[in-house]
Image (cartoon, rainbow, N blue to C red; front, side, top):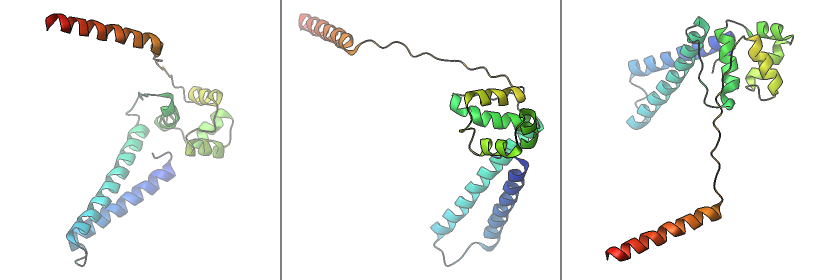
Amino acid sequence: MIKNEREYRITKAQAGKFEHALAELSRSGGDPRLHPLLQKAEREAIQSQLEELQEQIAEFEALRSGKRSVLSLDSLEELPQALIKARIAAGLTQRELAEKLGLKEQQIQRYEAMEYSSADLTRLGEVARALEIRVREDVFLQAAQQPSGELLDRLKVLVQQTVAAYRKGA
């Protein structure tokens, strides 16, 4: 995930290098000393890396342009990445977010580099408020489990009823 303009520029440059490498492989046909399967694997590896970089670039550009207004999370573990994406979508730099929070830019850089693993819940809430985002989380409660003894007793009764029904029919 691209987290700032510097990473964006680096990722764009890397994608350009992969594009150039693919174009060169297509033009030259690859190293004739390599087995065709190795040449194919090399091309596919470069293509795969390029596609991954292009996805990251597209996501960052979409966030930065404001095209995304809702981020769906499946768990609280995804909240840190959502906060980073929300900062990008809000058009804030790490420095600007730090200023809003009364922190140093380096602290935000550390938080984001470690995906807020060192931040407590209070700090996550402060970041969310500074970004003016609203978090709505559904909590799904696990159904109460029946004691295993009771479950086994019910299974025994069902087996006995099935055996009795089978004997009547036989």
